[in-house]
Length: 158
Image (cartoon, rainbow, N blue to C red; front, top):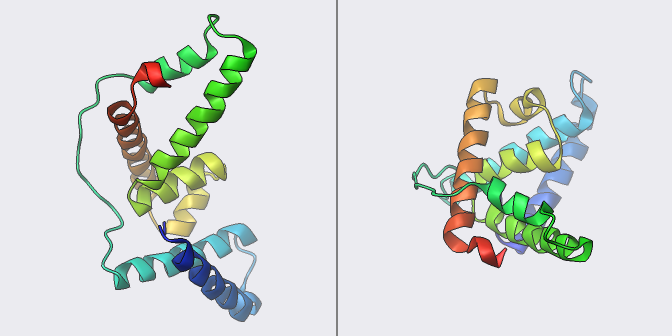
């Protein structure tokens, strides 16, 4: 959610202190990771609000191609295992770079769902968003990510 390394480090320390101070109040109603995630999420939201950084950009861009085309190229039979490995590694770096450009809320939801493999329920507990809203935001985040990838990179380049 936070772009600069220095701010991330400061917020990590702030979250650590909050977790340490409130650990006795943890009631085991959820996973510890969900509880810590909620504290982290709320701390980041407060930071973004102070800095007047919007957490959600609702601009809508039209995309022409599908990410599935890129994936099929990586897994196609025309490529050796080494070429396929290199493609996957480079596309992973490109994908991570493009995820960083998403609005903070979209970036958070994509990261929690895909990287941390959290359920909608767990993400909902962290973000205090209903499941339907989460699904909608995840769809929009994926769409914005796909459009950004297609806009900024030629399919042949990937």
